[in-house]
Image (cartoon, rainbow, N blue to C red):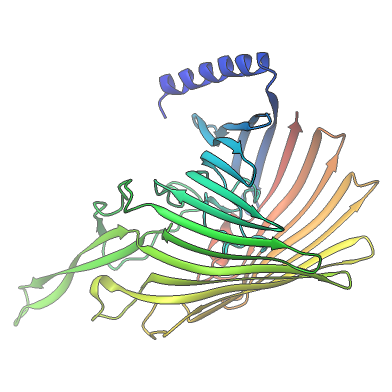
Length: 418
């Protein structure tokens, strides 16, 4: 974003703040400084300053919310994003929300099974707070209430992909190609149209014994498939001439997915049992099969999680097992047929719930890697908090977490809420 455009946005933002305050609009938010230093060299991997604002006002029939955010990342230019901007309308049996919004589905912690409406911002891998990792989508959302149940229907006219790390980011992993590839981006854009729209539907119900959701979606894969076309040349210095790989033409393309699934949670003698599963139809995977067109193959897969939440005294504990299973697997596929992962959480509050100790871990059971995230935070008062933590990546380069082992860091966050 150029400096002039950003300056205009900031000026308009300050004018808007003044107007909204004059209209008795509720304003809240936070300012935060966030620094991370790597274990090996002591270099700053992250220096980030954030201003997050929330404007909201609710009447009897209509409400609105605006959530602009300004952040300065690694001393680069100031960036602006409008995380949410929507209007709510309330009727007797249903509510309607129109505008840019974030949608949270499912029961799992730290993994996204049926929580697929809002795409993710993975520019910092999985490190941002979970309430910040989702990106907003421009959508119309209808909630229709039937007794203790709710039917939620979502229409998204414009596709929004997952945000990936830029090529100069510490979170960017350079693919290993036998020759330098040529990228063809002609099929990477999804033209906004009725035909290209996304649709989601969910039924949820809360009872005294169980909470459950049943969902379905006709959507686009947020991550593009890399279609690979091999171009061969002939080495005329040999007799007879030998073919050699001259070029790789890689065409990123998003494909349609049909998804169906559900989730539940129930308490049994003080233990909360959670589960979530989704069946994905139409996913394209990379393959080494020379007979496969564009080196991709279409397969369905099942993704599910089961979890337990319980307390031992004042210590809160949580554990999850996650599995991804590709159906009708082909041995030449580059993904594993079965990928197993687990998460664990230990949380303890002390000093009248002002000092918080926490350990959260992702454990890659298939590849033997992990992301271990200990942290300690202290609330000086209701508005001011300081946090110290670490992101420890373990394993080899084949694993989802082990590939970032050089990015292990300690970090601090100082946050003021208003």
